[in-house]
Image 1 (spheres, helix red, strand yellow):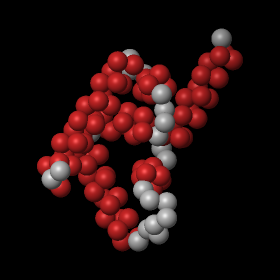
Image 2 (cartoon, one colour):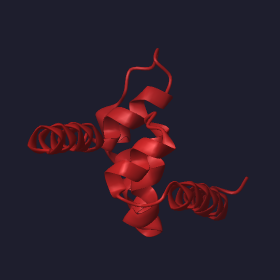
Image 3 (cartoon, one colour):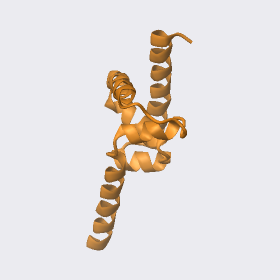
Length: 108
């Protein structure tokens, strides 16, 4: 029992380390690989992303970012200790809120 408990805790800690990577590294993965980032633009963009994710709240942003980084629903559910259905609905609602916020701010 102790061995399995240790293994489970180790795996959870490993997941937490991966989730705590800065959002900046996640965002550069989606951008153009050939562009050389201007640090001023990067800072402004990061402030905007932080504000947007802050507005939708951690309850939606954490599962959304984990999913976007490639975690499966089951892994997210295990890490957050919530049912898979809840993970799916939070990701769906995060997308919906993000889409609405972006459309409201920047138009189409």
